Length: 329
Ligand SMILES: NC(=O)c1ccc[n+]([C@@H]2O[C@H](COP(=O)([O-])OP(=O)(O)OC[C@H]3O[C@@H](n4cnc5c(N)ncnc54)[C@H](OP(=O)(O)O)[C@@H]3O)[C@@H](O)[C@H]2O)c1
Image (cartoon, rainbow, N blue to C red; front, side, top):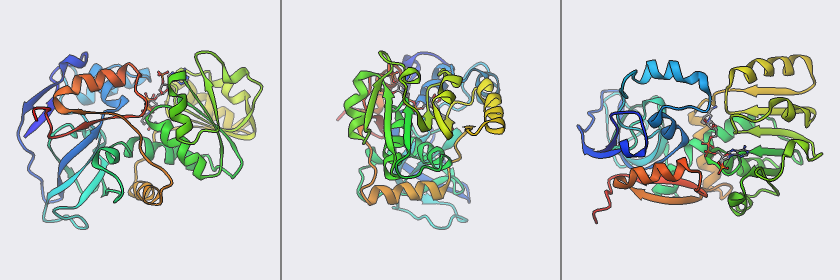
């Protein structure tokens, strides 16, 4: 089968399409013919081996290869068609159209992906293309997980920092479904995109600092790794909730004190990825409550360009790779 591979950490040019062995599913595994994979910030971080959260470096390097990557095929989030299932697999069968997460196993940049049935593989929303569906799990799962923790009530003022990215785009839509009044913070080029996702207000972080605007919020959902923790806590209303997707050590420690000694709550966490959450997202998509907006779709042999597009943050919407299409046609 064809796959986009890398055999050294580095710039986008380390990515190449090559023939690799097709995986053979074990008894408890599902073999998916991948149709599309989202190109995510995590793929970029793994390729160049630089992380927004610095302490990730050592444990990740030990786990994923000290001198060169042990897992040579990136891609954590996919859509596709079940090709075959092992003898112990129940609930999925050949021909099912699915979407899901390969988690830290990666591998979705290859034409076939074998995953244990315990992994997140759920029926694809019927009203979505494979490309659109591949863009759902990362952003949707993280946004749903964190915003449920925020216990949003109708009318709550919610600020999403980094709202124009993969997670933020779903965060806006899900917060709106929960009845929130949403302020999106990102750079100017993302304004029309985040408004299309449902944002009520927009702040361009390159011009204005939301922490000094005089506005206060019930919830701040923060995707920006180096944002000012105290300044965010200060503009929360009484009983306000701060949620961060970037588990920096300093913020993890300070969040314990905020939660214990003030009337505000701070949560800094890794999002779990559950079948219930992905099934909820599927239902929300089929009900027309949330959707994907794609920036560009790239064939496999333009994987390096797809990575550049994500890395330079010029995208407005998700960047997706069509798998199995090397652009020769
Ligand atoms: N906790 C977890 O389980 C988990 C899981 C996945 C990801 N994450 C983390 O969550 C973060 C967001 O992920 P993502 O995939 O949504 O990233 P993303 O798609 O790159 O989105 C980040 C957005 O933030 C914007 N931004 C950058 N600097 C900003 C600033 N100072 N103020 C406001 N906006 C700013 C970026 O736009 P511009 O650069 O164009 O301005 C971009 O639109 C990442 O740091 C990622 O590592 C956490």
